[in-house]
Image (cartoon, rainbow, N blue to C red; front, side, top):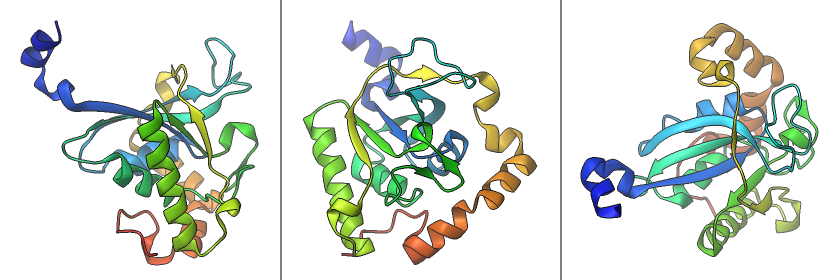
Length: 193
């Protein structure tokens, strides 16, 4: 069956998935989807126990993105580097103007290899930012159920460019990223250690 699947759709043979939380899912989706090797990024909810969460009620869940990527074109460490440079890893109580549990940064891992890659990325971020490791407030959690967000949240930045840009600017996201990460903000540049 697997061989037949590869013959029918060879692209899916190397596809991997990763779930990340880092504040507003509109922003995280937008920031990750243009990296070469990313097949798609979808906004949703994960991390909690509530069944069928919605935007109006996702208590216990974080706003997350499901990243589908081609592991032959982009590596998990490269995605994690871009992810960390698009969030404030020092803020575990939310991100930028979005506060609370729904917006805190979390890397959801599927196995020990992903967990190890996540730990290494967090250590590298700590070194680059020149802060003690215990100051990094990105939680690592086992991957659970991903719930797709409502259709109007998908590709929000592209479909609502003016509203999205106003939100992003007024929230101070890029200003904070520039101050925190300097020239490496929003980039895949190698870690500066």
